[in-house]
Amino acid sequence: MKLSQWAGARLYAWLELCLLRRAPQDDAASPAALWLALLLYIVTDVVIAAASSGLRVALAMTAVDVAVLAAFSWALLRLAGRPARLLQTLTALAGSGVILGVLALPLVQQAAAAQRNDAPAAGLAMLWLLLVVWSVVVRAHIFRHALSAGFSVGMLVAVVHAALLFGLVEYLFPRVT
Image 1 (cartoon, rainbow, N blue to C red):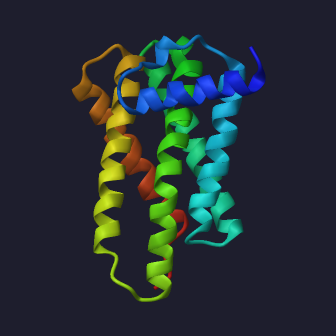
Image 2: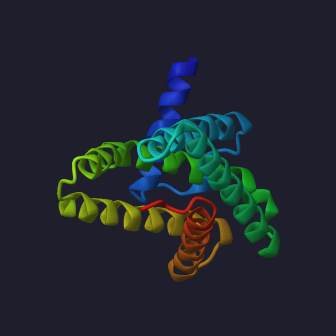
């Protein structure tokens, strides 16, 4: 299989994951898929963060995001006695993050433009909220499969992860008003 076909198959699998039609274990554990997912996740994350911050801050925020994603997943799976699932779980989290990040990018760019022009952005805020909820649901789906638990457990873990990440980012990178 050509590299482009392989990468396209990964992107399609991550889209299916975002639509809750696929589980992390549906794909073989692949270090190459993890590296592709992380690379694309980092690029997407930096571009999104740079829309409202400088490049240095965007890079630092992305480093925090990736570190929290990896450390949280590692600790969770280690505590649950399922460390062998880390590769597939991180690949699924990063890969789905790429898909959702690409969908978020136009919203982030429009919100940044609206903020610069002091334009109302209520519609954008509602769309952003829907995207955040969708992201948490996708992560809940991934965590529930990683833990072999019910969806409510996955949702609890996903909400804890999101709260931890948002709190840490807000603490480390406070917004100047």
